[in-house]
Image (cartoon, rainbow, N blue to C red):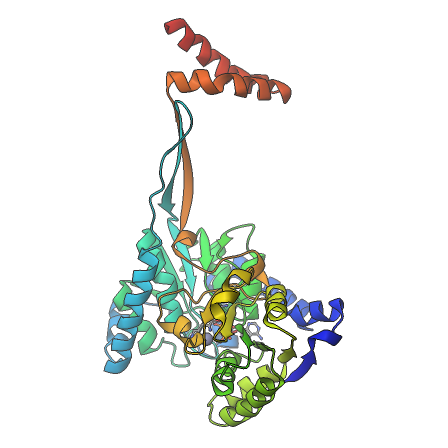
Length: 431
Ligand SMILES: NC(=O)c1ccc[n+]([C@@H]2O[C@H](COP(=O)([O-])OP(=O)(O)OC[C@H]3O[C@@H](n4cnc5c(N)ncnc54)[C@H](O)[C@@H]3O)[C@@H](O)[C@H]2O)c1
Ligand SMILES: N[C@H](CO)Cc1c[nH]c[nH+]1
Ligand SMILES: [Zn+2]
């Protein structure tokens, strides 16, 4: 991991450090465009072929049904079942709290406006399963979809080498009442949900994280379907001062690094000592990780920045706009107002990022690659549309009518004006 001194960095270098561009981005885009076209053209046939090429499995059918899922789920170890149940309860509690009925507002006498939420009828959930199968993502996506009341929930995840899915994902399906998992991964899953195939239903909005292929596909199908956000390779930025614990910081950096070689783990610290001790700790802890080669590569592509003070650390963090921001300092309270761009924030030295990944209740599907500057993570809101309503009483029409008539005339739109005038004449005639 390279160490930079912020004082010596040009503006351009800071921007470069904050950009997540990878050399072969263009190649990935070309490959994904081919995959999408192939699914559009050949439907299920393309999905079988991609399963063979990418997932190394010859599928007999493209999904597991309720009975198959139930049989696989029955093999889950009891401690895993209990942990998933607990995580599910916390995620459900937090997302249920996001349900709010908005007040009706009288903008002028007799003019009433309000918003109501309606669930998106058909949603597609992508559950990663390439290098690691993520049942936690299943909980994170399906729980708010169910609370919102989405009628059709299509779930895609790459097939495992036996042409099935694992007991954890199957158990989540049973727990959540999801009756099918489509064994489709990668960009082809996104294309299948965007355009539909003989087997995979077309949806209105696609949710879920994934690798570069999945994320690129999501951004490419946006003229056909809505997407939650670009939620690509995981990343974390840790702000640490001399009250931080280097072992904890190293553990948090490695936790995101082990997701994939293109993950980023950034340390921004006011203390040279914390940086050097964290780097030593990373080496020690790496040795015990089963995914040490992946994590080591990601750490190698990551960096640390030495800053003069916590204000500068927050400035850098806002420019980077991390998916996960950890404030590894006892002074975290005073930093909260300085946060402008971040997906999800972990406060103090005893709050590991992993709790948000699994079980605190917050959603782990979060914007990456700097998109936290503009996008929020997945929440209940992402599964609904907010429809606005308005109603005029006769008095309301009289109050607002002239304003609309004048603006419509200014725009030269006579029919707009007339839609008001014709009613005003009637209302005034009644009186
Ligand atoms: N941002 C978030 O909210 C968030 C949350 C969880 C996970 N993640 C990220 O999700 C990612 C999961 O990645 P993964 O790879 O383990 O699983 P994945 O399910 O995203 O991707 C696996 C699929 O990628 C496709 N693929 C692999 N190599 C390919 C190639 N050369 N060409 C075309 N397609 C190819 C295959 O179809 C395979 O089934 C990680 O990067 C992780 O950091 C992000
Ligand atoms: N850290 C990931 C989001 O970037 C979510 C996750 C799932 N499982 C473990 N971690
Ligand atoms: Zn994680």
